[in-house]
Length: 210
Image (cartoon, rainbow, N blue to C red; front, top):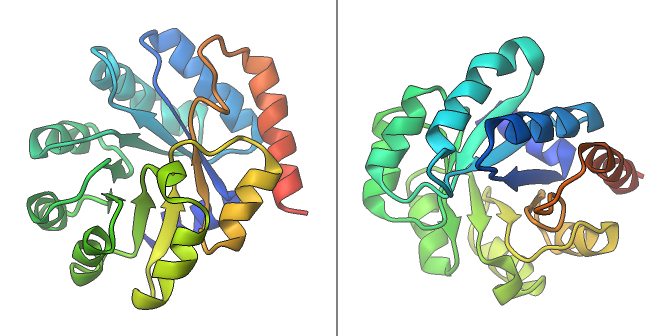
């Protein structure tokens, strides 16, 4: 966890996306990688997700050295095992429950669970997890992490859902206690242009590190 935690902290954003086309998916990963991104969440949101992810993992160590490629929107143990078997670097869920957490710990799977309430966060905390996704973040607002953080020392928070791919919005979350923000459609639109994506992402990273 320490390597991915550090990379996420350094990066300040975690792009997440799904595309039915493997070629388009590869091009998006390449565009993000060229911009300096080293942690990406591919989402399990379509029929081609497992097949596309498997192919991306097969080429990533050669074409994208140093990239941590994880899978998101995993909702049950079967999906968790499917992606662990194809060497997902981490698994992100939109929900949390004891069964998912225990299974991840038993199988040595790096789990970043989705949490909404303090009770959710407490399940992660009690099981020794140190990073949770706050989802859907826009429903809770920027003050939520600041309010809940003192109760869970050592816990790191990554809000996702409804966050704009703009420096000001992301900084607001970081100032509120987040270590990074998950960025989906606001960064990677449906009709994404890879060249524009590289430029936009590079600019965002530069702005956030000033």
